[in-house]
Amino acid sequence: AQKVTQAQTEISVVEKEDVTLDCVYETRDTTYYLFWYKQPPSGELVFLIRRNSFDEQNEISGRYSWNFQKSTSSFNFTITASQVVDSAVYFCALSETNVYGQNFVFGPGTRLSVLP
Amino acid sequence: GAVVSQHPSRVICKSGTSVKIECRSLDFQATTMFWYRQFPKQSLMLMATSNEGSKATYEQGVEKDKFLINHASLTLSTLTVTSAHPEDSSFYICSARDLNIHDRTNEKLFFGSGTQLSVL
Image (cartoon, rainbow over the protein chains, first blue to last red):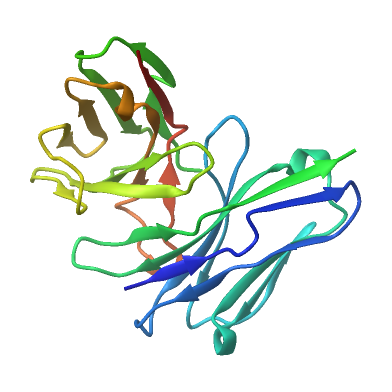
């Protein structure tokens, strides 16, 4: 069965600091998909990134970057020059293909507080 | 981008009443929708998978008679919490798969904005 671990329950940083959110996953499938979602206080889930297991290329999008390491089963997320608006709960998720289609297993989430 | 609309965003009801939550895909067809539950400061837990035209698949421990799911069309799934009790108070959120994405390697799930249910 698949599993997602986010060891950091809560992180507090001061604005403009860089912060890395860790995500470690477990799966027996050779094909799988990894995601990061942001959940601001309003509650909705905001899609940030999808990474396929066969694509290990790291990605940068503005202040966000992701480091996918299959060898360590990790998919870490870094925010550079953090801003107060980055304060939210961030979820890492893993999806395996099943007969009904993809469903997600979410990690427990990391609550990020960016202080002014 | 694809949008999933979820209503209501917040509902307060008395114990024993039933509450219906709607999840609509606004600009795409969704053969499969998923319902999640989230307790305060906890992660999202999958409750059930809703398939258009067939019965929903419930995760272990989720009472199908308590949480009725109907997916009667390609754009609408509903979750009805029957005879709600205070322990059903939670944040419920749905997600939907886009049927018409031809490149499945880039498929994403789109999430609704969630429903905060408070049962008094």
